[in-house]
Length: 304
Image (tube, rainbow, N blue to C red):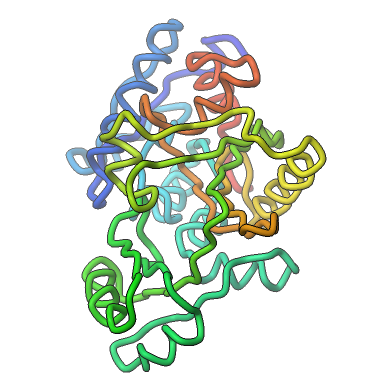
């Protein structure tokens, strides 16, 4: 597509979620990449402007992260405005933001997920610790960027971890730790890109390891056999499509010590910062950042 065919583009970033700072970083880089290619792109922060001001734009590049950005609400608004947008549609975005319901759909389709439990204030925390084993992870079901996540390593710590997660979201899950390695598969336009293995030096791949530290290692090639990588890339693409997702996104998975993989979660508006994983995977397949941004923009669409 030519720049003229792409039209006037609103790059949506900032927003009101707990991931605002990450979104500002992602969106500013996306905007610079588009403008640098001569595309008529402008910044648009929904926290500071009415969505009515989007009228007149031809496309929207969603670089919002978290609630009111990648949870289906912004996608629904753009559907009503009839402005094609990047990333999955309303349903896939809403389900993908909810780790619990994503797991339910993947389980129903026969995909492997780590054993988990939904927590409430009335939960028998000791029984859940025994059932899932230690260590385990506790996380808000509808937050991203590892916000509110705790690693429970000792008996009796689950209640405090639940309270921390519940500060961010009333829906909280506990998840059995799978400790054989953390990986991610980027998906762009129906293609699963090379897998990246993530090796943090922190206790786990938390907010600091994702965005602030420079000692987190990203391995691509990831070290899996060609056969295993092909199997998982195909599975990640299936996991993405099961949610009804289109466009682009990222599917994270874990490996146990025996070499079994478990799909963890999907990201329907992946980060585009200098630490982000989709640009790394694209670069490994020969696509540099500006071309990646252009490809994602060309995938902008409406649900129907």
